[in-house]
Length: 418
Image 1 (cartoon, rainbow, N blue to C red):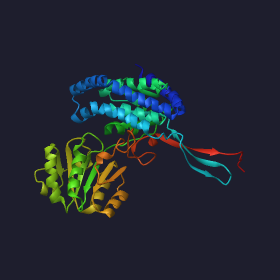
Image 2: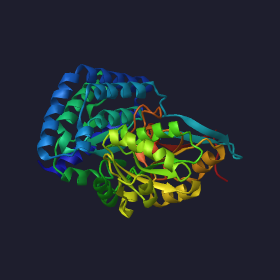
Image 3: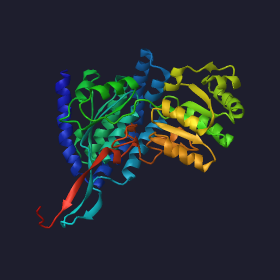
Image 4: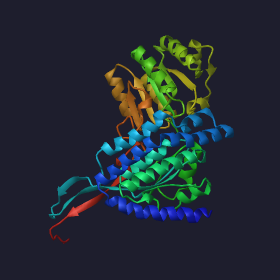
C-alpha cells in the first residue's frame, strides 16, 4: 500500500464530508447517533468475537495488564458505547448557537456563532471504545473525523467502524464522515499529523511517547495531555471515613486510566490514624506502597519513595504517599509534581476548599470527591474526545463545545465604514 496516497485520499474524503456535516441539522445527526447505538447493540457478539482475536494477539505479544484491560470489550463496555452515543444524541447541539449579540454605534449588530472545527484526526491506543465515543462526539458537533487506532485493536476497531457506517447510511449522511484507518503501518500516523490542508485538529489518546511524538511533529493544532499524575490530599480536618473511601476509590477503581490517583498526600495531624487504615485496604488489592520517610515511620514495611516516584504515572497498582504539614505544603507538592490533570482535597473547612480550588492549577480540581470523576461521561458530556491539560481553547474533558469554535457574525442594514 502507498500509505501517503491512502491517507491523502482519506483526507480529501473527510474534507468533503465535513461540508455535508456542517449542513446537517440536529435531527439528522441524532438519527445517525441512535442508529449507530442500535447497530452496536445488535453486533455485540461480533464485536466480542473480533475483540477476542485482538486480546489473543495482545497476550501473545506480551502486552501488560493495563493495556489488556483497556483493550477488552466486555458486555458492560459495549453497552457503555451505545449509552454514550444516546447521551450525545440527547445533548443540546452547539452548532449554530449565537451568543453575545450587541449593537455597535455604527448600527451594525454583531455576535458570535458556534461552528464545527472541520476535520478531526484522532490517534489512540488500545481502547476500541474510543472509536465509538470519538465518532459520536465528532458527528454531533458537525465534524468529520479520521480515526487511527492502535494495531493491537485493529479487528475490534474495524467491527465498530462497520456499525458506524451502517448508522450513517441509515441517516443518509456520507460514510466518509467517519473513517477508520485500516492499515497498521506506522507511517500512517506521520501522514495524518502533517496534512493541514485536510486536518484541522489532532487529538492523541495514548501513552506519553505517542503524545510527545505527535506534539513534536504535528503541523496542525493538537488537543492533548501528557500524563495523569493525579493527587488526593487528606487535610487535617477531613472526615476520615470519607477520606478512606475516596483515597481507596481514586487508586483502586481502575489502575490503567489517566484519572487514577498516583500520589496520596496526608496531613501530618491525621497521618498516624488514617495511613494504617488505608494500608490495610490497599493490601487487600495488592497495591504496592512507596512512601516518604515520615510515611515509613508509620508504615515501616513499605518501600521508600524516590524523587522519580513523585513524577511517575504508574497506571498500575502502585501508590506514592507523602506526609505534609498543612495545605500550603500539599499545594507546593502539587505545584511541583502535578501534570495538571486532576487533584482532590478532602476537607470540612470551607476556606481551605476555596483556596484549593483557586490556587491549584489543574484542568479539574475537586473537593471531597474521587479523581475518577474527571471523565466526560461523568461530567455529563455524553462521552469525551480526550482530556486537555492545555490552557487554550479546550481544557479538561473535551466534549461537544471543545470540538467547536466561534466566528464573528455581523448583521447590517446597509452600513458602510466612514
